[in-house]
Amino acid sequence: MVSVQGVGEAPISVASGHKRDLLFTIRSVGKVTTMIRKSRTVGIRGPYGNFWPWEDYEEIVAVTGGIGIPPIRSLIDEMRDSGRGKDLEVLYGAKTPSDLVYKEEITEWEKNLKVHTTVDSGDSRWTGKVGFVTSIIRDATMSRNAAVFVIGPPLMMMNSVKEAIRLGFREDRIFMSLERRMECGIGVCGHCNIGEFYVCESGPIFNYSMVKNQKELFL
Image (cartoon, rainbow, N blue to C red; front, side, top):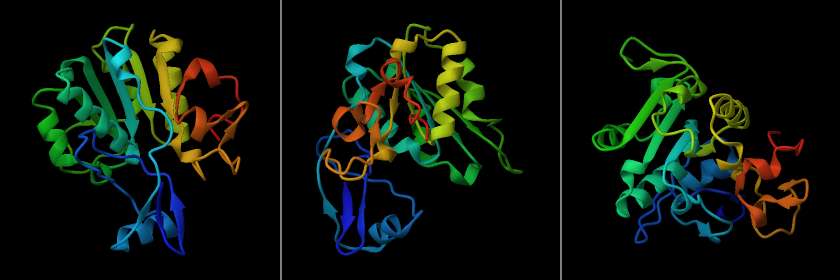
């Protein structure tokens, strides 16, 4: 939880898996995130919650959209540092080429990781794939027994989960990050409630089969 005194606080994922680093990637979309970027001093609480269960599975397919990429960057760091980079495949989509985050790092990742990128709308210089990130889930080369990690805007996550299931990935091996719903981080305010769960206490990473029947899931 990152804050600016007198302004407010927001849940921000750590974008580096290296234990010696604490890196945040923040897009200015409101008062709090704008001031976090402008301020020389910020407050930090945490970390809270759980994490991607990558050590429990032999293969991982990470599906992410827009500014959802920072926690996947952290995952990439963790798996590469452990010697398991070959077990990870990353599918990343953005609205336009200019909205892609970590462009230089993606070029580096592509040298020894399986990385697929797409944009909703290309430009004259874009030579890659065009379409929603859901359109490239079928390009994943990992087995359908792989775990699928999904993070991004609610609609993107909902459609990605549906497409992964349609393509044969196992429902009980699909995990989503619901971090966007967090408010206080310690289970007091109740704003992150999803059915019987508080995102900040039981998540933010949830197995889809645990929460699929909660109507608040993708609100």
